[in-house]
Amino acid sequence: MTQDEIVAAARGCVGARFRPMGRSARFGLDCVGVAATAFGRIGPSGYAMRGGCATDIAARIDGFGLVRVETPAPGTLALIAAGPTQYHLAVLTDAGFVHADARLRKVVETPGVPDEIIALWRES
Image (cartoon, rainbow, N blue to C red):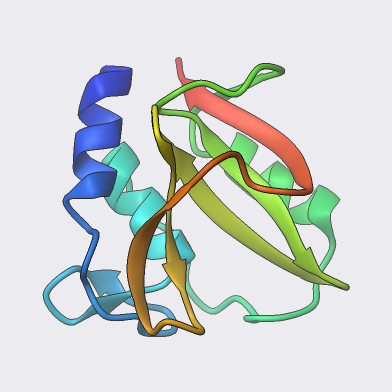
């Protein structure tokens, strides 16, 4: 997939309701579901919504065939520190980032660059 296709797929999720472990825009998505949809992959299941270790999460993402990069750009997957031992995924766009916002209970595109980016990946 091209970076433009990834951004378009992520934006196609905007408006879907938030659902923990959700993998379908029709029934609901969480941040892993948004990332899986955007990158055209099947995301993992059975993970904790809080806790864990950023290094372990990054290693799981490495296993999905994406390449780590240093520079944020549209179509990049970002692993974000959302709070103490709470991590979040977002797809970067030219205007901000698409993610499943649990507080708003839906997938949104938020302007700007996410705070606390831990790691970035792009399609190989």
